[in-house]
Image 1 (cartoon, rainbow, N blue to C red):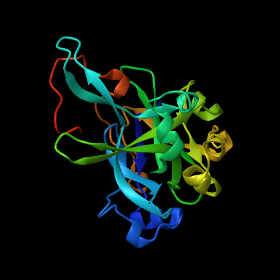
Image 2 (cartoon, one colour; image 1 turned 120 degrees about the vertical axis):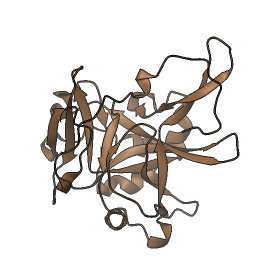
Image 3 (cartoon, helix red, strand yellow; image 1 turned 135 degrees about the vertical axis):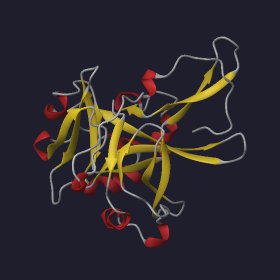
Image 4 (cartoon, helix red, strand yellow; image 1 turned 90 degrees about the vertical axis):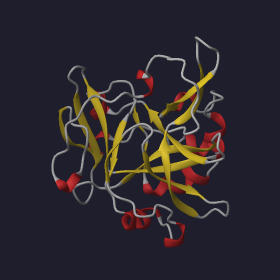
Length: 250
């Protein structure tokens, strides 16, 4: 699974890449994000009600309701940040989003960790022009309502089997990367057409940008990333402490 990625592409460049008009750009003063962790805010591209493309800020992770084993009361939902391709059409948790709420997740690189204590962080990207050519990961989105009436837009990243390059670090999964010519089919095609696009991206069209122990960010042109403490992904959730659910979901 993928618990860390970067998007250092400027908003204007994202509008050009994804063919979004300025009035459909809802990112505001979007800063480069050299390290995006689970629950983190970052852009997605999705279709508006009229079929136009729009850029929005979302939080990383579909919300899975949780109940305290001790009290039986609801507790803070778990954020599930990866959706396996082999579960998209069979799991009730993912099925409706895959059918009707697909999105693109802009990225400039993604990270997989190898080993533990300490882990080596390897940052992958695609070939092309510039230090960090932008690309899009296949995603799905959901709009949640909070206890106080607020709305929370969330995303999850589709994963598939790895190519030969990524498999040297993570032998089980990699994020599904989409080609520009397939963006519209992913966004608006029928589920069978969209599912056919989920394939390992060719290893020969990918590169390793940087790697190192504890390397937790990838700023691109700004130099090597920063080292930091280990982060907990959704599969490393803290033990159930019986705390009641909070109004602020993230």
